[in-house]
Structures are given as structure tokens and as C-alpha cells.
Length: 614
Image (cartoon, rainbow, N blue to C red; front, side, top):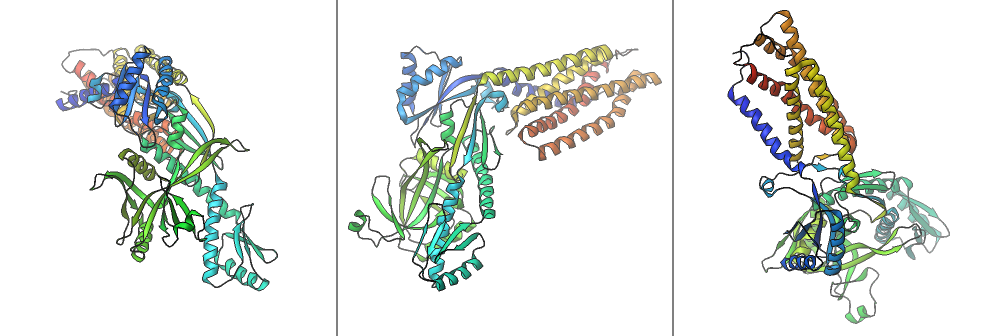
């Protein structure tokens, strides 16, 4: 027979349609308002916490749909947002400051869909709502940090080359001043420094060299800080599991972050705003404890404190920072204590190997540095950050250490896990200020979803009316293929990780539906032409599909090339449109050609007819 498919093609079509329908089902159930309770500062939720939450709900007659605990996170689902907000206030007061109680939205669907790992489409910020932050980088802090590093380098360099000076310090204008005894010393120092420090501006004033960073170097620092902080913030959010977020640059010193699904700004701030790093420093064991108690220490050392408040004298020179960490994970050592395993990059590994090789028998300290919001504002309205430091580990260097080592002395496994995530995600180059925050509620996102659904529905109705009037039964077959195409698009978008549906993505879906109908119009018109020429019904169907196929392939490949270019060069909203267009083109080729041909074959393969309803 001319129009009979082998059995495996029918099986493939029905299998693809059934699987797509199965994985598209979770999108019908929507999301439930929920509260997520997580531990703060190393603590974690347990069964006792779950029982306490249940008792609290019962005591206040608050109805909840579901309460569950996974990986130390308790999730409580409710019927509506009003109950969710009421429950959050009550639970927060009951649990105290030991836990973070955050508002969230979780998928609502039958358990059997969880068994096949079915999930609804990931919705973007404009459809789901969430939290938006406008962040400003503390460039002044970065410049001061760089100036301190410059002072250390200048001090060491001048001593190394026997160039005497009186004092070297940073003035109130964040510029370095080097005072000399006479003009001869100033001249020698200027000649040397100008030949070795291209990033510095050097001015002579009354036997004093005033050192500042060049504008080009400051711009380079700013650009590197912006790019690296964007990468680190995106990586940090992804490590936590919020893969639908967007992190983009805005202006010269700003970053804008959209986190969909989160309604609690305090929780979101804690997720992204932590500025923390590690520094490895050598312990100065040559200081008398009595002098330490009186704060009498050498200029090259400073006093830091253990988590229990015990003072330790450390050399100011940093051996290694968290910038060289490429990977970290938490585990349990042979004594049953939590530890963090760290892997360094090649540069960090070389520094660590060389240092430990020449300092066997000495003690090395791991200093944890974190910037926290003090609750106060400066003159610009920015949050004033407090620098908190604590020594979390002191180890004896017994042998040469390479690019892999472990840090112990952490209070529990959950604290070790949080530290490893923070280090693995990366250290912010400079502290950040959240200067604006905006909450987009799920109701606004729901309105966008309704508008997008209405756009798709109007397009389907218009296509249906047109196809019925022009092509009758073949028009109905085309609309069936169009619906199958829509189901496959939704199923594929739900299955594939990393794809987020936005309003621009909905526009891409509407476009691909139009492209799919266009292919069916070409096929139907070709079949009508073959019938007009005089071919039999079976031959006309076969030749119509054969002659229309090259035109369909050409038009779809052209659109596909455009979509790929848009995806590679466009911003996030353009990328959303492009990726949905690419998926839609792939599926429309499948349904417009194979799908409709399969249905037509099933109808006409064993049927005697003298006329087609087309």
C-alpha cells in the first residue's frame, strides 16, 4: 500500500505522545503556598522540629495540606496565601531565631507523578513572581583592599632593595604615603617604583611619595569584580538549587538578581548576600602570652580569636585565600568529626606545596572571614557591613601539602556542609549592598500566565476555524496534530533541566504553533494540486507529502538558524523566546509531517473512497 507506515512508526508516535502527556500533567495542578523551615548557622531541622510545628498548627487551629522533611528542611503546604502568612508568623515566634522560616511555592500534584520524577515547567520571574534585588558592589572596599596589598608589597620591596624610609601608611583619602629622610632617598625610590609598578600613580611632595591607583587599573578592578561576582552569585544560587534565577549586570557597578518563587526577602538575602572567605596564615608562636594579653605584638602580626574567644597571634601575610579553591565537600574523618575537603587550582597548589615544604613543624591557622549586615545605614543609605573573623582550625604542618587538604574543627556536619557549599560556589570579590528589593507576588505572575494561555487559546481557535473552513476533515487532522505538538512542547519543557518558561517563551510557543499550521497548509494544498492534476487519492496523498516536505524543511531550518543566533547573542528574555522556538520547531516537524500522515494513513489505508474531504 502507498500510505501504510511500518508498525514501529505508529508505536514511536503514540509512545512519544503518551510520555509527553504524562510529563505535561503536573502543569495542571499548579502550586501550593508553603513554608520552608531550615537551620541557621549550622543547625538543622529534625523530627522534634516537625512534631513542634504540628503541635503549633493544631494549637492555633491552622489547617495544612502536607508537612514533610527532606535533607533537614521542613516543608508545610497550605490551601491559600492567607493561611500561609498567618502560619509563618506563628511558627517564626515559636521556633525562635535558631531557624529560618521562609515563604515559598511548591508543586501540588499526586504522589504517583513523583514516582516517575515528573515536575511542572519551571516558571520564570515574570510568571511565577518572586524577589528582585538591585545590588551595588562596594568598589571602595575593593580599592582599600588592593591598597593594603600594595602597601605590603611596597614595604617588602623597599626593604629588599635597601631603600630606607621612615613610615608607610594609608591616609584618609585611601592613598598610600611613604615618608623618607631626604630628597636623595625619595629620588632613588621614585626611579625604582616607576620602573616596576605600572598600575600606580606616584607624586613627590616634601620628601613624601603619594601613591594611588591609576584610573585604568581601577576600571579594570571594577570590571573584573562585576564579572566575577556575577559568576559567583549565579553559581551560589544554583548550588542552593534555584536554577530558574537570573543574575545580570546593570550599569557600571550594579547587578540585578531575579529569584522566582521566593516570597521571603530575608531568606533570599541570606542566600545571596553572604560575603565570606578563608585565609590561611602562619601562627606566630614566638610571642610571650603576657605581651599578647597587653596587645603588645610585632607590626607584622595581629591578634585573631578562636570561636571560643581564645586569642591567637597570626602573621599578617596571607599564605592562601579562598580565591584559589576550585572544589570543596563535607565529610567525616576517621575520628567521626566533620571536616571540609578542599581542592585548589594549580597556582594555589604550587603556593601550598612550596610553603608547607619550607615550614614543616610550624602551625598554620584557617581564618574564616564573613561580612554581615549591622542593621545600620551609612550616609548613602547603604547597609553598614561588619567584618566578623574567627579561627576555625589550627594545624601542625607535618609534611608537604599539595592541592588537596582538609579543614577540621567545625562544630557539626551541617555547618561543614554549609561551609563547603559557600566555598564551592565561590567567594565574592568585594562585599555587596542590596540597595533595592522588590517582591512580585504570585498573583501578578498568575495574570501573566492567564494572558499567555489566552493568547495560545485565541491562536488555536483562529487556526481551528480557518482549517475547518478551508480543509474540512484534513483541517481537523491538522488541529489534532497541533494539539499533540502543544502537549509535546509542554512535556519536553517539563522534562529538560535548565529550561525556564517566561512570557517571551510563551511568545515562542505561539510562533511555533503558527509555523506548524503553515506546514500543514503546504501539505494540504499540495494534495489538492495532485488531485486536480488527476492522480488517485492514495497517490495524491503520497505525492502531496513528498513535494511539500522540501519546502517545510527549508522554512524550518531558516527559522531554526535565526533562533540559534538569537539564543547565542541575546539576553535572558530573548534566550527564553529562542529556546522555546527551537523546541517548537523540532516538535512541529515531527507532528506536522509524521503526526498528520499517521492519522491520515489510519483513516484511509483500508478505505475505498472516491473523494477526499479537503
